Image (tube, rainbow, N blue to C red; front, side, top):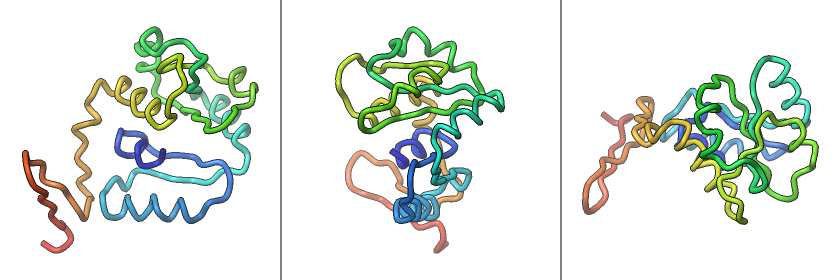
Length: 156
């Protein structure tokens, strides 16, 4: 989830619980592949984070297959500057449905939360996130039709 968020233009992720290993893996990815603006933080009180986000004027999107279909709300949410996207992995407490500004469905069918996040970010950025160049990357892939070409920018 964190890697998709980074690659698709999110500014960071908050992860519920304590998983320092995951944080270190994501930070290592950022170090080599770029995106130094991308922040990863562990939170012990995700409900408190949602409350604080809203108190500070931000809006909360909860991705759920039970929500309003994305095409119906994408133009409205695209205009919001300060978004927190909540993505659950198991059964999500009803509290999040009630306290989100938008409950958004990418599909009303069971599917991957990672795919839902990627599709939401793609719609929000109108595909521009696919052109992100991480200028601070130490490793870059040079796109080509066949073969693999990887350069190390920290060796030049």
